[in-house]
Image (cartoon, rainbow, N blue to C red; front, side):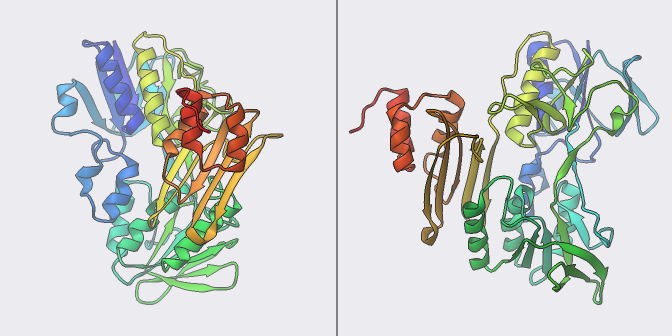
Length: 417
């Protein structure tokens, strides 16, 4: 049996390891189109802040792990998939045949249609290659403009600040991390960043980037401001990598459509990770969740099913956890709430603390927090377990900080007065 995995990220690596556990004899190949060994994009901020070297981002020891597992690594770009011949065409002109194929091709950074983003001072922050360019240009004292204060942008904020640069953040939304935090929580995060010396412009956009003197650029904003910059970083979202599927009959929507077994519309082809439109635990809908815990979960389920061990994926809770210059913010599940649902809120802006709980009937279905790191794992546990909170719902509506007491009372029959 020849298993081929396109994509050398967490989903692909976990799938390969799962396949090997299930089948000691199968041929397993991971094909990745970056020159480095398989690595975690989530480690890039630590590389930017000099906490690790490049090798610290590697998912496994490249010198021993894959050879020991008898997993072949190929560094090539897949140009086309011939689903009838069950064959891949690679960029070097070679071909590969498969019996079972996993598409774990991930996503690529996208840039908005702003004039000047092709200048050499402009980079995304999605790959190790991007990180190398940023390190070269983000010298101490340099002016850096970050376009986008979403999840990706806020992940790298602290790393940039630690490099001793002067940072300006531009966000078109009315708050930071608008797809993760509501107005109050996002506003707290912005206030925190400003107090840490970061210049934040919300409800603002970049209109153009132009070459300027001293090998810098001039960034023009919609509010009329013009900012000098040695480096501009775009963090404006990603899109699933599906180009190699052109001409195939594999069904696509936002990403590659899969069933509960991570199987695509072609019975011999599976998909996992940022490219896959898998089931969302909270909604029951099939959605793209571009987060690493979901990618590894997808990879494991796909690997089991490719090996013939029928396993259903019942969805992953959408969760995001950010450390932004020392302030922790989180969101879980349906953090924005459901129609007709109740919510509980604790707001202490002076201490940069916020909790918001969202209920559907007597069940906790979503939560978001800023500055409250205690018991955030409990929030996820209550959401995943769909526990009927009973009288504890009313207590949480009055005081959302007693989440641990509610959890213990509802799961371990421990009573509290």
